[in-house]
Image 1 (cartoon, rainbow, N blue to C red):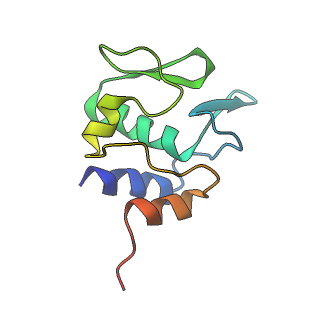
Image 2 (image 1 turned 60 degrees about the vertical axis):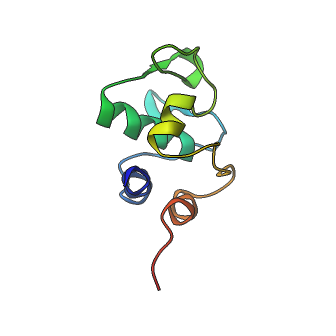
Length: 102
């Protein structure tokens, strides 16, 4: 279920993609996200836990700021490891997380 929330956020245009592997970056003061950063932001908005730190790092309670998806976020999505989404467009990443049905 939570993976669908992430995939929907990747598909709906609510987040601007960045061209780096940084979870969150800013371009002219506006936020831009990697696909993993969108996942962190969906987690933050839905659970009201976690916060963005300087340098595009994401912090969850009880953990150090992470340059990738923190363990608490992975667990919330039911994932054992960070999905390989580097270099994927938001549409490609969404299809990996929530494959389209035939």
